[in-house]
Length: 62
Image (cartoon, rainbow, N blue to C red; front, side, top):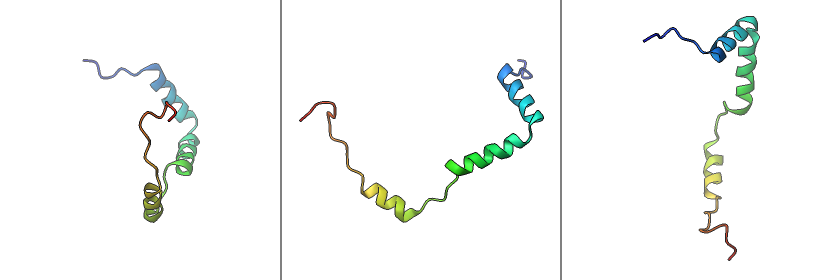
């Protein structure tokens, strides 16, 4: 089996990153804004405790 195959999108992304090395830093900075957060355990606990269970048959008025 030939494991040296690279798809067109993979080649494109590799070339893009080679031409613009700052994109990796920008990507990581953008990720830090949305995803890499420290969770407050107490706040998470309050959030879970305050959730209301969904009623069955939510699409029918009752």
